[in-house]
Length: 559
Picture 1 (cartoon, rainbow, N blue to C red):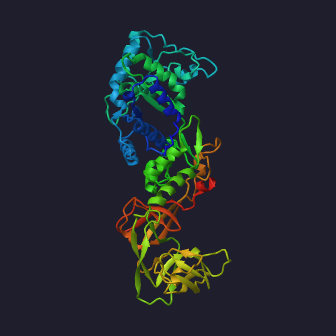
Picture 2 (cartoon, helix red, strand yellow; picture 1 turned 180 degrees about the vertical axis):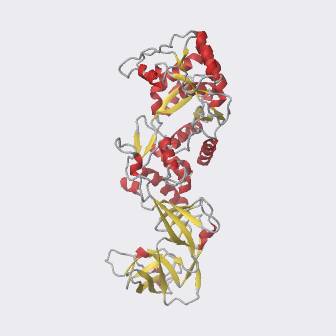
Picture 3 (cartoon, one colour; picture 1 turned 135 degrees about the vertical axis):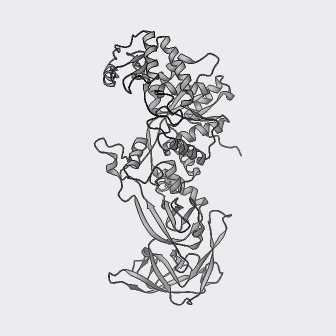
């Protein structure tokens, strides 16, 4: 059987063309370059999977390089979280590097540019410089400081480095072309003054290079063959190449920047600045809140590395901005957990059911299949007794023929147990059912092989033995935003669309096998959805997060 060859995405096509045109395969090297100013989210996962996936495809090294050029926003906490997320996804980087590793080299190159008359110090206000930039259709005008002498620029730049000027008073600009059609080429800023302690270099520097100056030169120093960026950097490519022109030596590999569209997801926001707002203003309980699109939030909610990789692969990469339906992400985790998650029973809205003809004091341990989708998943023992909990919505005194759950005078099967028949019920002063009284067919035990056990009834209910039930706090999560595009409303703040019902806390009862469940263990609560043990759980208190309900809206779209 001939294996169908997988079609290449446009980035892979570029690499294949470069190899065909003479680039030695051993020269391939990629990188993932996050800024440590927040936690990674599902959008970053696209870039992670792309870059590390290329490394695996071509057996090429992939660097993890932290773009740490702004000490006002970057912290070691974010560095540690990013490393943990990438490792959890199952990817291994070749070298752990930092843009700050290159501060001295960047400074040395900058001195050379000043000496060559290609950079100058400007002490105008940011407003004045912005006004001189022009517009996309109108050329800019030169700064009055553009023609300072090399000697004056060197002296001023050294004063910037030595901390003799205040923040915002001076910048160093590249001297390119104020009339260039690409506004990024109109004498961009290369250095600014920031008198802030850096998480790695401490107080060694008070001038910091801008991203554009750092990005390409870091790629060059690391000999990255393909610098893959998101689409907003496409307009920066001219500048990327101009900066490389100033430093590339003929015997060294020249990096190539190419761009793909960032991953956008419906019913969420992807801006780290806005995610930080949600954290700081208390709309969520931290970066790893299970409602957040962060990798740490998805992990805590119960998502698996495999589901995130499948999502990234299925969504693919594009040359144009688009929005991916969150239902696809939910479909990927359902599909994964359907194959791997043990089935257990939990009751989230309990009402007591008493089997009146079941012997008092008797208990049985019934055999239950852990996962019918996995033949190696094995079995477990589930306790059964005279009093059990079922879901309140699974019982009605009266109902039409389309209601296949329990109603007075009708029969249902209890999962892995017996067929029962509802005889009567007890209600409180508000008319709410507080107890249901049933009889059971003691010859109808599932799997016993008796004729009664083979009897067909239309409804099957999950249940938990009252005597053996473990209490659990269950956190039922819904989408954090009510609008499909909360970030796309120009006249409204995205926070206006926050869903007030995005979290509901339920006191539930679960079967006793879950008493030993560990943090981040995942389960299917039969008939209810997929759930994960939360990091707040303790040996004395079970806490579960709902990952997703069982209903698959994405699968229905394809029907």
